[in-house]
Image 1 (tube, rainbow, N blue to C red):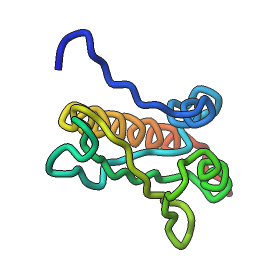
Image 2: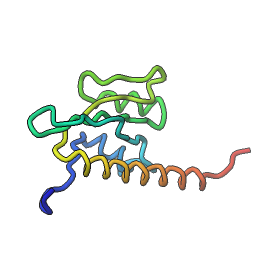
Image 3: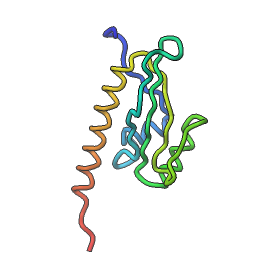
Amino acid sequence: MTPTKTICFALTSDLHSWYDGCSVAVPVMNISVESVSEGPVIGSRYKVDLIIRALNAGYASLISLHLKEGFVASVDSLEMRTSVYVQNSKVFCEWMEWKGKYIDKWLKSHYDMAPAVD
């Protein structure tokens, strides 16, 4: 990877703001890598299978409206599986792992600070 290349994860503006927690108190979804093709499958691009986990059923419904055709939802609809094609699967997967841990930490911190309800 050359220094001029960066990770570009194309999301709709809604998905971007929900993933980064821009328009909500905390991210309402997290994305993890499920698997990566052993070699390029489209030109020089590797197929990366992703799992998108929604915070709740309401957001799962909204998120699913923004996914490409062919995604697969779990029985409870909280997890959705889809795929992307990337040129550098190693860097992409490292970034996704970092981002996933960052969001998990953010959510844990948010809910640890939430007041207890009697």
